Length: 179
Image (tube, rainbow, N blue to C red; front, side):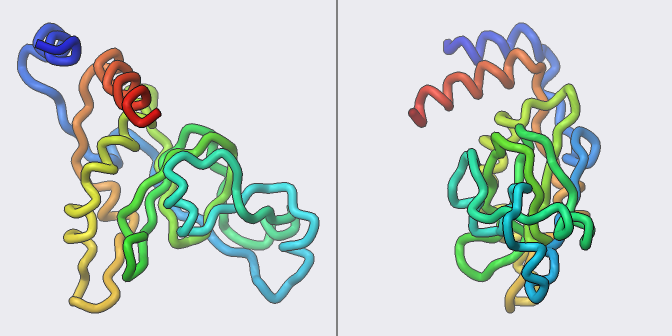
């Protein structure tokens, strides 16, 4: 029996609790400053993510920076380090892909930012949602054309929420494995 099996047996005698993401995290979407206003995109200091950046897996830096004026011009929000971002749209492999952030940043409207509460480890959520890629794509298949996820779908998605010590042990093992 593995250490994780032991922990689950001891700490979850009645099974692992499941909750919707909306019950255990704040879920928001970002926005994009107008591309026609150079001031928003020149000499930027605020990291801003586009949906393609989910392919990094763990995001330590953003490909693009926006200015304070760009931030103020739209409804994008600053999310803290340790959030999970999920691509909402895309016909290729992007839609349903998740990444974890290691910096405070903003996102465009094609990314959902998931900021877990104190009972859910963001890295655990990242790994779990990574296993859900096909299910998320199926959920978002739409009418057979472009399809897309939305915030309501993400908030309603059910995730396991074992005790934090179990979550952190799973993350420790998976981080070691992926290194």
